[in-house]
Amino acid sequence: MVHAVRGDLTKTEELENIYNECLEKLGGRVDILLNGAGIQFRLRLLIFPMTAGRNYCLNMNAVFYMSQLAGKTMLAQKYGKIINIASMTAFFASVLIPAYSASKGGVAQITKALSNEWAGQGVNVNAIAPGIWPLS
Image (cartoon, rainbow, N blue to C red):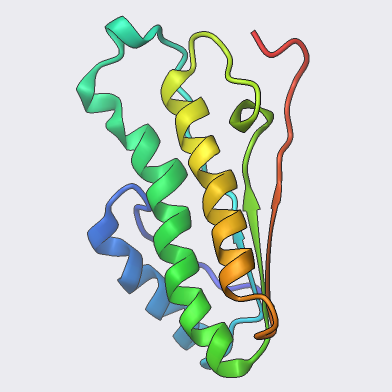
């Protein structure tokens, strides 16, 4: 069964409403959270506009807060799987995508932190780090 939920993951103030609507449609249970939304702007840092901060907000903040929200449900259930989409740029930063590289590095670190924090409590947190070659 598939359910659609509309929301803007770049707006931190909307994340809880998005999650709660999903939780309601799923009957109060969440077994898997896939944090897969992402944005990339190809610009050098010196000309990267402050208004493009949505990049970082979506790539890092949405993962952080959606994991927090789903984690509460999953820990209460004593079961859940969180899968984060990181990037090879989390390990090998590339030119022209400094904000993307930084945000995906954050995704890799929050994945490790939550994996350690929730180990042994029935909630697994992992990341997938796809990439292209060459990275520049």
